[in-house]
Length: 214
Ligand SMILES: O=C(CSCCNC(=O)c1cc(-c2ccc(F)cc2)cc(O)c1O)c1ccc(O)c(O)c1
Ligand SMILES: [Mg+2]
Image 1 (cartoon, rainbow, N blue to C red):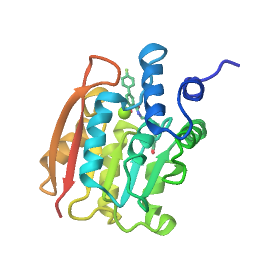
Image 2: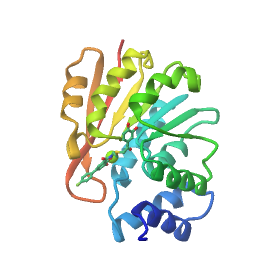
Image 3: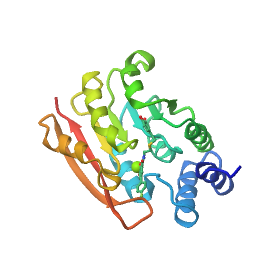
Image 4: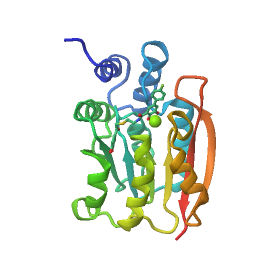
C-alpha cells in the first residue's frame, strides 16, 4: 500500500541527513517540506523563535504536546543541557514510530522520552509515572482545541511553578482563540505574541509565550 507522508519524510532524512547530526536532520525535513510535500512541522521561521525561547529558559524539565514526526523534538533536544528531563506526547502510534526513528537518527534518543497517548490522560500521570514535580518549559503543538483544557489541567495538577514558560504554536492558524483569550486575560500569566507565518507558507501565524506568575 502507498507510504504515508511521515514515512516519506523519514526516508528523506535517511537519504539527505548525516547520522548523529541534528542540524542536518532539521535541514533535511525543511527541504522536504519546501520542495516535496508540506507537513505540519513548526518549521524554520517559528523554529528559530522556539530555539531562542528554549535557550533563554534553559529548562531542567520540558514537556512537548504533539510530537508528530519529531522535528520540534529534535530542535528542542539539541539545545538542552545534559541531565534535562524532556518528555514528548503523541496521540498517533504511527507518528510515534516515525518520530522515534527521526530522533534516533539525530542521535538524541537519550535526551527525550516519546510517550504514546493523549495529553488529557497523560498529564495527570506526570508526577507518579515520570517523577516530575513541575515543568520549566512546555511546548503546545497538539490538537488546537486541547490547548485550553490542558493548561487548566497543568494548573490543577500543580505542574506549573512561578516562572514556568508555555509556548504555543498555531495560535492564529489553525488557531486557538479560547486559549489566547484565557492566557491574555488571566492575571496568572504574562503573555507575549511572536508574529511569524504558518510553516513553509506566507499565511499569517505565530507563537504565544505565556509565563506563569503564581
Ligand atoms: O499530535 C497530536 C495529533 S494532532 C496534530 C496537531 N497539529 C496540528 O493539527 C497542526 C495543523 C496545522 C495546519 C494544518 C492544515 C492547515 F491548512 C494549516 C495548518 C499546522 C500545525 O503547525 C499543526 O501543529 C495530538 C493529539 C492529541 C493529543 O492529546 C496529543 O497529545 C497530541
Ligand atoms: Mg504546529
